[in-house]
Length: 91
Image 1 (cartoon, rainbow, N blue to C red):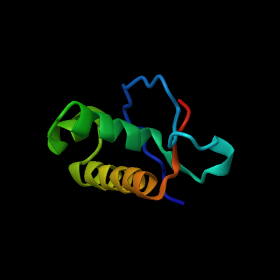
Image 2: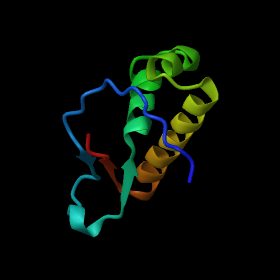
Image 3: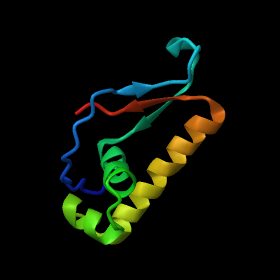
Image 4: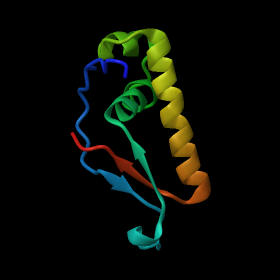
């Protein structure tokens, strides 16, 4: 099993779950965003950072950052299109 590299996560998130309106949470499928994925979304999409700069902020390579960001965006798109709840991994 590959060694997991510790990444730098700075964001503080006030909510750990988002779901479609009008649907009880227990009836929905859930998608979980990892700490790395939510941090990549925060840096690239919320703060508008270039991937190179965001990767340095997280202390990872730019290709790794790109892979994490793409995974996060795919999960978010799936949740929006298919009406799933999004959970953020606990810090």
